[in-house]
Each structure stands twice: as C-alpha cells, then as structure tokens.
Length: 401
Ligand SMILES: Cc1cc2nc3c(=O)[nH]c(=O)nc-3n(C[C@H](O)[C@H](O)[C@H](O)COP(=O)(O)OP(=O)(O)OC[C@H]3O[C@@H](n4cnc5c(N)ncnc54)[C@H](O)[C@@H]3O)c2cc1C
Image (tube, rainbow, N blue to C red; front, side, top):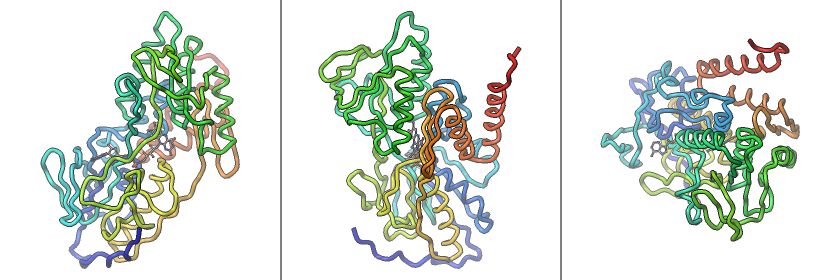
C-alpha cells in the first residue's frame, strides 16, 4: 500500500475557531482520547462529543474478577455519565451507522447526524464467528457487560447444583486461561474445568515465564488441558471433542476476535478488516481523521490490546492538540510495558522488562497497575479505597467480628 504525504494542516485561522471533535466508540481508544484531550488548555473551547451506545465503559482486563467477587460491577464498568460528569465531553448515547468522510458528517442510528472538524474512530473488535455447530446457541462469550452478568449467574447456579459439574473453556489464549482458573476457584472441588485448544501450547505470544506460571496455576486447580484438540460441536449440556461426547454444563467461548466492520466511505483495510493508518494514526489522506485501537493497523506491529489502545489514545490527543495549534502531528511509538494475567482468585502473573512475578504478589501488582489505569481520578480513588480496605483486612492478624 502506498500513501501520499498528508494534506496541509488545519486550513482555518485559530482565532474565533472552536473545532468540533467527534469520537466514535467509548472504549480504551475512544474514551481515553476524550479524557486525554482535557489536559490541553487550548482545547478548552472545543466541542468534544463521544458517541457510544452502551451505558457503561468496560475495563476488560478486570472483568474476570467480577466472577469471583473480588471486584464489583461498578468498579470495572463505571457509567459514562459519572465518568464524564466533570469534563466538557458531551456523551451522545447512540450507534454510529455511517461516516461520510467527504462531507465530514456522521449518521446515527436514531436518525440524527453530527458534523465534525476532527474525527476519532475507535469502534474496537468483536468475537470472530467459528463454524462449529451449536456454538452460537450453547456457548457463552465473555466480552460485554451482559456476558459477564450471564456467566456470573450461570456460575452461581452451578455452585448450587447438587452434583459435580463440568465446564469447558474453548481457546487457551489469555482469556481462556484466565477464565479457566477463575471458574475453577469459583466452583472449587465440585467442578471439572476443561481447557481446549486446537494449537499445541497455551498463551502462544506470551513470554515463557508467564506461560510456566499459567501452566502451574492450571495444574494446581486440576484443569484438564486438551491441546491439539478439535471441538466438533457444542450442545446444551455437552461438547463433542475429537468425536468424543463429553458432559459440559457450561461452555465458554474465548477464541479470537475480528474488528468491528468499518462504517462508512471506503478505506484501505488489511485481510482481517482493520483500517490502515499512518504512523501518526491518521487515516490516509484525511488529515483530520484518526483511527485507533483494535480497529486500526499500521506498519509497526502493534498488539490488539488495551495497553496499546490506551497509549495510542494519548498519542491521538497530543496530535489533535498539535494540529489545532497548526503544528505537524508526530508518529506513535508503542512501548510494550509487559504482560499481566489473573491466574485464579487473588493470584496473578506479571512479566515486565525481563522480570517475572507470580502468586499473591503478582496478583496485587497486577491489580494495582490496573487500578492506576482506570479512567478518571475520581473513579480510580473510589476503587483504590475499597481495594486498600480489602488488602488491610486480608493481612490483619485478628478475626473480623
Ligand atoms: C474479556 C477481555 C479481557 C481483556 N483483557 C485484556 C488485558 O488483560 N490486557 C489488555 O491489554 N487487553 C485486554 N483485552 C483487550 C482489550 O479490551 C482491547 O484490546 C481494547 O478494549 C481495545 O480498545 P478499543 O478502543 O479498540 O475497543 P473497545 O475498548 O472494545 O471499545 C470499542 C467501543 O466502541 C463502541 N462501538 C462499537 N461500534 C460502535 C458504533 N457503530 N457506534 C458507536 N460506538 C460503537 C463499543 O460499544 C465499545 O464501547 C481484553 C479484552 C476482553 C474482551
């Protein structure tokens, strides 16, 4: 793919000009861009609109903790209304249906349209469909708030069952391993958790130190690991693996994702449907359009993670601030800070710059890092206060009344 150099910067004088910035998608890429924009004093008179249909932001890395009641829903899924209360960001609760790049106009599902001077698109990814009979009907995904509520309710039901239960987790990537260990801890001795993957190893792109820690956590919890195993079908209470039918009272689907399809005027995409962007995260010839997070791809290999989307958001906000000041945008450089996994209730694995920490300490470090990454000081403080109380109670040598 060849790209011509970007067009000139903002073609209007800055006096008497209050640019309209519209952000589509309020996840890690979109919400954090909006929040980072608050740091720039010269953008105070901009109109910033965040278009997001859901009521709550989802801090996905900490969703697993809701299943074991280590964290509460409000902590990992704060409402946008509350997050944006002390900002000049206007939340438009709607789906974007179409983006007209030439007219600089967005059509919303409820029929309204919004014009923009600058646009940030961060619509994220969704579960990639799998051609396995019964999977759509009988397996549960773990991506959205509804998923978390449904999976938690099913686990609560299974915890009450008068008989032993079997849970199958499809996919031994990060999400599969984290789910398997959490489910094992939630249901204890009455559950047989089975982790199935067609590949020959768990956590393929992760450092060996973390893979070993995860393996240890799975073995400690008697999780049955079935690698190089094909799922042939999923039923209401069973799975068929390599043509053998096994009981499965709950089947969780934790395999790959694909980007949410692009919503408007044609753009260059890769084979997976991700939109090609410049190193500055600008879209092709549209100097005023940025694409960020899981939906974007560029020459520099950047993982589809919250960590990358969060860093890219800071870069987009900075570039918007620069462009509005009539300065050239700068390239985004991703810095991989490390990898972290939750490996059961209260424990985790952390790998950063060659240092690997596991067990309870790993769990505490991971939680602390993620609390630090939560959106807005106000929310972060509320969650931190409760977490400190929990840690205090867990190390206090005397019994609580
Ligand atoms: C269970 C789970 C655990 C994860 N754990 C980790 C982890 O530990 N570490 C890590 O780094 N990454 C993790 N990830 C990956 C991480 O969540 C994503 O990489 C990250 O959220 C990508 O950010 P994004 O802004 O591109 O998309 P998202 O955060 O998914 O946000 C996209 C937003 O766009 C909105 N949207 C979609 N379509 C439209 C539309 N038409 N109009 C308006 N809005 C729209 C959606 O409602 C959503 O709010 C995890 C993901 C999941 C599902």
